Image (cartoon, rainbow, N blue to C red):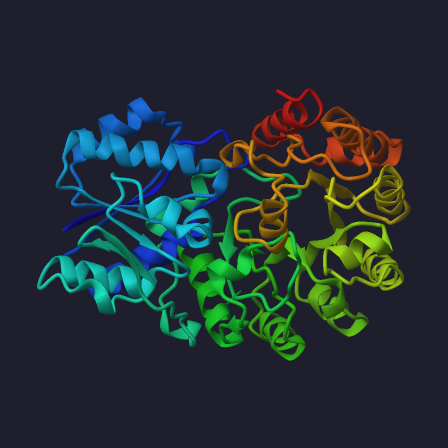
Length: 459
């Protein structure tokens, strides 16, 4: 059986290795010996829908699995339509963040055969078995399917022991062919995932619907084993830990750092996805630095205590100042993530956020416009209040305003405040000069150019 796993055509400007598809491919190959598994990243390959259709026509897979964010869902459903136009017998399977958060909307599409909510490794393997035999789909974990004109959704199960699943299939991912990210020091660099699940309740986030609310982690020994493999096989020069909550368990994080040092791994690494400030302290920061960590991003979101409460982030801003200053002093380069335009924000709240970002020793700052992510608590609230009726959620981008906060006049004012934040932060001489000097590769300059067009020129 030929199984094709796809990142669909999209306008997203940040192109990253598809580690989720890498995990799925590795699991399927470990369980189904005669399966031919292929990963197609349409973003990396620069495939539009015409090229995607040509690929399907030429390669004729038996099953196509696709992952999509809300921004990409229209493209994903169009891919399903194109597949069925070529061959109605090709099985289409949808998964990823949007499908996990809005399963009925996706499964009701006539061109979608199956969907998965949450993690797909175990269920996808079970689905392939059923397609090859008796076709009893009722026991397939996390599956959504159609039967007798009705949509049916099976129980959601998460993998408790992450050490049981194999590494991602790095060969199929072709991770070393991806563009060099800004902030990245050395290349090739590999993505590493050491945990899944998020127990926090931030109103703007829907990650818990995909990976679950329970924090689950791999053992430090298994992670070190994977890093050694990547260093030996692919000659990586550094790695990135993509977890949402790498430092959730301090003892595990310390043990990981100790093993990096003990095993003389001698690789630099960083955390680009936004660590929780509350999980960091001096002991852990110093150990991370000693083991090779040179940079990290932290999720601040807002410089307003009021908005922190509204978001249910509950971050102590004085604690945030202390930790960011400490990390900078230790020698770890810091990036801050901020959200502008939360529904209850005023202009004064946003100005507090801009001021807060500039006061701390961040080398990078991301000022994203609030988007009502499907599956988040705030999305449900806004929908109930009738504020999402005319919104096209598939057009949601962090560079484009979609909701007017209660305290602002219109979307133009919000976009103007985002420009103000970016320009005031980056045009300070010390920040600007360092940013330019450290991002002189072609890939990095292209990414910066794309971000400038989207966030400043609004193109």
